[in-house]
Image 1 (cartoon, rainbow, N blue to C red):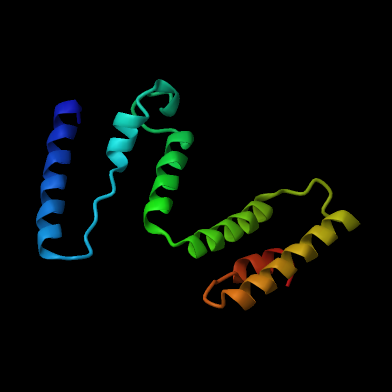
Image 2: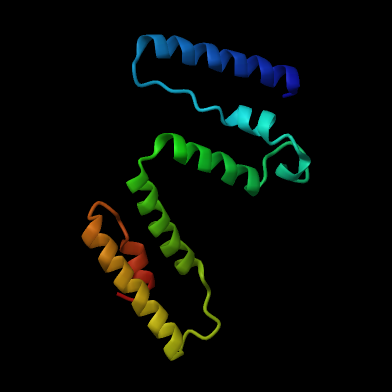
Length: 132
């Protein structure tokens, strides 16, 4: 695909979205493509191939998406879950230490608290990982 083909397919997509929006109330168009191509035009936002967006661009678009479509309470839940995922991704250098055991127990307490407040979450893998 080249620039002409991308523009053509994008025009088709927008035409379909407008048709669907006329027919259905809850249809929205989120301009992720436009954010990347118009707002993040600088090469710093692309991978080495200068075609695909890098993690900085993806995070920028995702934040715009979150701010557009997620309720503030859901954003708070997402942040808590992300913090737990970061803790899970942490690879301990010394897993047999008292410090890591305290860290692990603190994460289990956070999981317990989160499940109390948000019973719809599935944190079973995290409970197993942190030792329950």
